Image 1 (cartoon, helix red, strand yellow):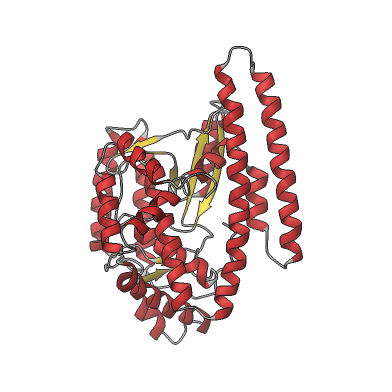
Image 2: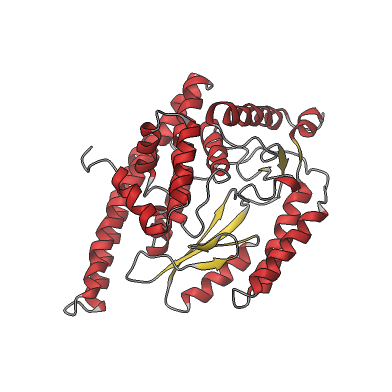
Amino acid sequence: MPAHPSLSHPAPRPRFAAPILALLACLALAGCAHTEGALGYYWQSVQGHARLLQAARPLDEWIANESTPAPLRARLQLAQRARHFAVQELGLPDNASYRSYADLGRSAAVWNVVAAPPYALELHRWCFPFTGCIGYRGYFQEADAQAEGARLAAQGLEVDVYGVPAYSTLGYLDWAGGDPLLNTFIGWPEGEFVRLLFHELAHQVVYAQGDTLFNESFATAVERLGTERWLATQARPEVRQAFAASEERRQSFRALTRATRARLAEIYEQNKAPEHDSQALNAMKLVAMQDFRARYAVLRERWLAQGARVEGYDRWVAQANNASFAAQAAYDAWVPAFEALFAQQGQRWDAFYDAVRHLAALPQDERHARLRALLPPQGD
């Protein structure tokens, strides 16, 4: 997703939450028994999240503070309305998350590392307590993420390191203040802002351990369906218009990356055939990537003519590799299946969430088989 500039605002007063250190320290020690060299990684997680909580203050404090800039105050008030909407209209959790705000003084909440083999679209996986095995690893310092990326690249993997604006603690840390709003996304256009809010709250509804594809596709489906309702009932015409233009670009780009992903998967499937050596596979892969960038250039010219900003897309395309294509797939692979399930449940959020919880409780193979059966026929 393209980056958007955040609004300017003063640094908040520190707020220290001692209990969170105790909990995260316990997680760190538990993790050491599962992951080689995990102590340093978990300690940076302890420190990073604790600093995030230290910076957070309740929205009402920010709004009442005379020194809070008017644009930021208006955006925090919008966040309160969107948070209320999420509970009342989408059935999302009514808890402490996104009822406070923090300025981290940086452009991303964390930096994720993803990696994949040179001839496969399968993400390298890391295993953690509680979350299971997942296809990414997050760091609070970009330098640490880059160091992990370099280590994986030295093993022959293709690597992508990217900043993410928010992450979810899955509701487990509601007692410690929940997940705050952050400067990393507070200044996004309204439609983009509320969709991220709905996405992260959806992670607190259902989480299937070790199944990134399921978890991210579910949250993306909730974000899409929820944002559609918000725009239809809460947003001004100019907000709907801006979001529609942004969504058209997003869908065009996703169609291009899906097509390229399918082409690469077909090429890599030939890796199993003895008559294809790595040199031949690499030549086919190179042609596919050149075609991808050429087709993006056409989209880019059209978007620039429309006055759109393309920096975020430019960065994604410039760095695109197996890792970035595989990571993107996690966000949309099962979305049509979840949207079909929502319709099947009469567009009732409570029934939909119950059905998704039932899926999450199944073994992964059976879960994916059920989702596959929900996918609309190709061509629909």
